[in-house]
Amino acid sequence: MAEDQATTAMETSAVEKQPETTREAEAPSLTTKRMVVAIDESDSSFYALQWVIDHFSNLLLTTQAAEAESGMLTVVHVQSPFHHFAAFPAGPGGATVYASSTMIESVRKAQQETSAALLSRALQMCRAKQIRTETLVLEGEAKEMICEAVEQMHVDLLVVGSRGLGKIKRAFLGSVSDYCAHHAHCPILIVKPPKEMMTK
Image 1 (tube, rainbow, N blue to C red):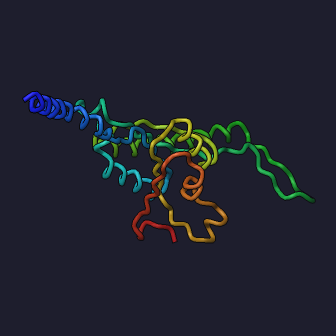
Image 2: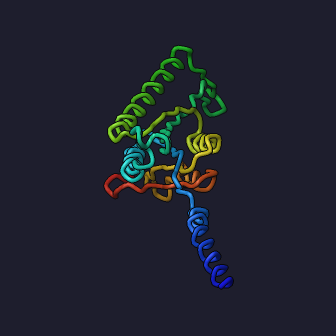
Image 3: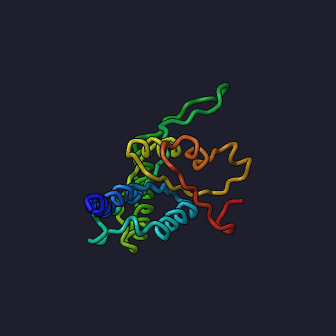
């Protein structure tokens, strides 16, 4: 009789503890909290942005119910550095020509207008799907600045478009996507556009 009661007590105890064990074994839900998409003037970069919007919008919504758990999408554009001088070949007639302050101001204004237009287009695309978005403008070598930014921001995923450069162009110009794939300190997604959009 005492043995039966002890067995019943052990079974009851095991049943009562089972839900607690199950809760502890459950894996936490995995969500991408911060994503970066790098854009430039190319259609391929905006194709990559649209791809992210179409496939990750559930992680980046601005709706009140999702805001507490949703992540942030940062759209990054890198302006090329402006050199204040142009050096011509050495020898007879060789010289270094410095840009005037008026020219420098004109170039910088044009760069700012270009950046503003690109980011405005990107924001419109994101807001149409209620994506939590912020923008960032950097200046320097695009591939290096992108990698530095994602490291400083502790990004969960970097997304870049592929411009489809041929072997010769890639050798001379380099590829931002290739560089980021080897140097970015986070997972990277390279979005390849349709054939008709790729550069031959």
